[in-house]
Length: 228
Image (tube, rainbow, N blue to C red):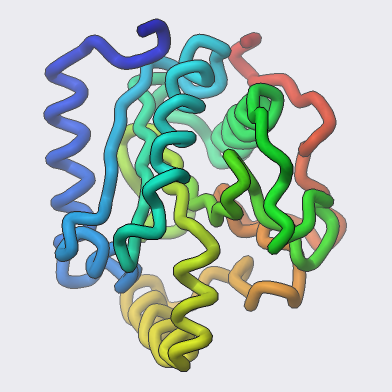
């Protein structure tokens, strides 16, 4: 299938590196550690982030993930891309939103009713195949240590898992523990972090610190700096 990486060396190396990243004692995301322990992380590799070929393959994989997401307690879908490498934070952010836009263009389902489709709305979340998804971007030059990874990567986490943690009154405790680990690792929490409903979570996706008046390039068309 077009868009899926055929580089077996990349696939093996990237998957091993991702698991090692999560297993590091100082890695801050406790949810990712729980997902790894429960074998609830699904990983797929694709060629070039933001291309229509990669989008075709990614959309099929993400659609399958959305159907089965509620089986596991902490499900995550990890999309790794072989290219482009060594992006600046701004370049990565541009490609991230281009990829999300192209996923939206091929999505046959309605936007999840749990969240807003307006990226300026405080209750915005990305949606695909009817599932509300929180997106975490990783790349080599992220200013946040916990988001540095050699290959451009998007992690999709269903909102339903966060809602369940809130219902079980476990979310606040986990959130505080993660933020304490961020401070221990980097000396500060990510300034973009906020609780869902306080401000648009679109500001958190790329990991870059954005200005107060920043607006996500979604759903308006954006161009990747590499001309795709």
